Length: 474
Ligand code: SIN
Image 1: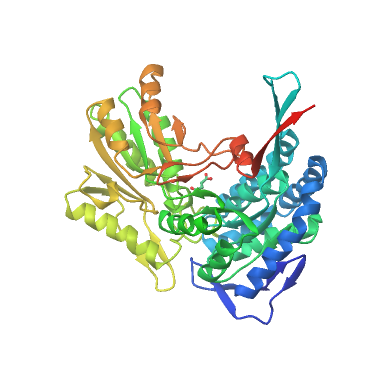
Image 2: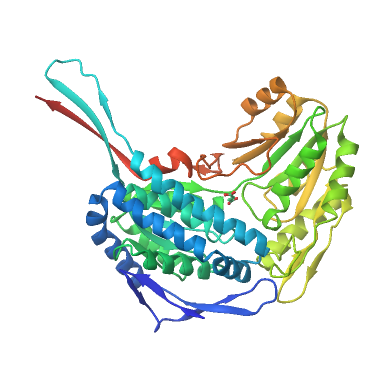
């Protein structure tokens, strides 16, 4: 399968250098994509800039009907999208299908939300004055997206941007461009006017530099590492671009001694082992009250042991491959470092390097502490360290001991203890007895070095709007 760039309603770039996309489960070639350079990036920016005026002047109802068509097409072709996703990214097919549904939910929700972009009228202090606030689209948006959710991290940006009246350029990562191409093919089939949606595949550094330098691109929305996010924030200063940054996490989970342990184990497994632990909001460390520590850990090991590692295309696989060798080495380093420093590895602890594919067993480490790397850095793998705590306050203090503040989880049946926990945690998303808090209608984003702004919900729409205040003397 050879795929090319989508600029101004045309597929182009067959003559460009090709980049291979390999299946992380076996190293097989899944497809090739074109490597866009400066010229193609400028053409995409120009196309989105030209298309902005007419698209932004359509009514919200007209824009909504395009988004509805895209939603329907995604649902009709969900099996095909899911298969592409599993082959290029590795996640189990059942998870890919879940992701397609999740991705489409952003298109449907923002198709409706676009009709509810309201301004306001402010009472004036002079009889002959009228004061109004109106909302307008920010302009051309460039989205730089990650490999761990190849579809949903595009649609969480595309849905609100297009609904608001912005035009869009997507730059997917080198690991998962084929899902992005499929989504853009569906945009074409849905009939979006030319230039409204554009796609660039190729080297991030070249494409991002052009995007960040351009004064025609008014907003950059990025999901990825904190390191790259910081670079983009610095580069955005040149043209004072509006930015949304969804960056790294290191999610804690606190399990109190009045928690329903079955619920806690179910939620923690769902959070940690989804996508082989390669999600920004997955639980990366668990703090358990000493009264329930042994019982909780035993149950957690019993349930985690049932998870099956393998190729995401095989029936029954729960945990697919690790995306690449760097990711695999980091997981190994975290486990080895914890064990060297005294952690007790009660499940797993081993990887399988097949040369062209790397897998890691679901792993549970007991008796960890904050001297270990794993308690201080995002692992991005199927490893769960568990630490004993004596009080609720100790749980909050340890959970907040991180420069990151994306997601945190609490397990307690007590309204008052739970309320104190959620209020004390410096995190943008909290799951209370819930391991899977994400939803199209809810704000997603972090405190501290986990990012700037929110995606999803009404906040996610606001991110693509400018506020204009108009003072009128009559
Ligand atoms: C992420 O962790 O990057 C996204 C996960 C989600 O949207 O649930």
